Image 1 (tube, helix red, strand yellow):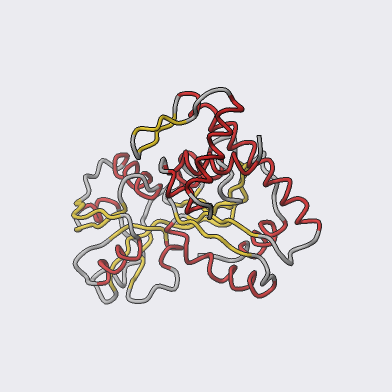
Image 2 (cartoon, rainbow, N blue to C red; image 1 turned 90 degrees about the vertical axis):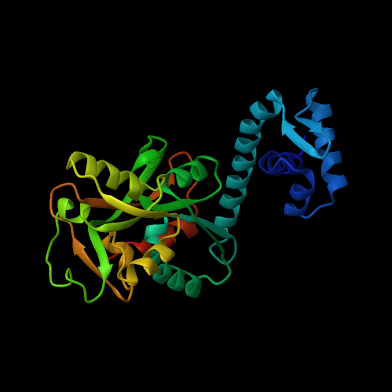
Length: 292
């Protein structure tokens, strides 16, 4: 059994399509099929059901996928340890970021890339729940996320970065511009555009409205924060996000929401059992600093 065979199997198990999997790992489809067949022969059981051009994982394939992922992750961690011994001249860094914290990453990335231009950086934007899954699967090295939902599992360690107040986000030059605070009942009467369910922000808001016994006037939902903010800039809708989310955003005003429990904790999150790369540790140092 070879490590490359496990990588091919993992990609085929992810995409459930041999041709696309072969393209993803830069080999021919016939080579990938041959390598997976050799792996199946060695294991003594089929890992895929081949139905015409479709492939599906067998029960054995589904179970083996977990162990193959752990094996490849362990091998990659060992390689990263050896690379770290040589310093930060080369290597890669895989970062997961929640959509609402994306603007906080930019200054740190500029400083990091200037200091370590040889390190290749992969950035994945996802919800907090999705980032937790990516950390567990060793697909990212660290996550920048609010410490909520699945990300609070005991499998993770976290380093607090800052707290950010939840706020009503409105277009500039509206009736809310001069307000120091706003209440949830007041917000509930406004036309709102909010992140879709599945976002930790939406989970937080649904719970806050329920506890305040407020039924919000939600007119639109979407899964793209930049587009959401563009809609708010038109003046037709309002939204609710953390104040950190709109730091540096033009054409918007943020009014803090009154009441206890309206702060959210942003954190760097690591898989507790994973090796922490020097690159990840250096980036975490750059991310710690004054924020909103």
